[in-house]
Image (tube, rainbow, N blue to C red; front, side):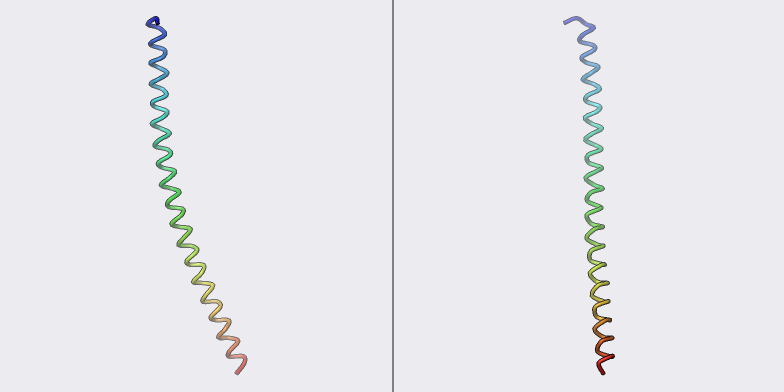
Length: 68
């Protein structure tokens, strides 16, 4: 291979290595964000269930008051 071809190949490999490193970092960042969203989702589901339980308790209490 000529020196020009080797240099071109080396340049392309360097670019691919940089791209691979960037994509690995981006993937790690996305996985971290996904994990945060999952934790937030669980927290919101718990809050929603608590609110639903409270509303149901209030409705039951009001029905009991009405029945008296």
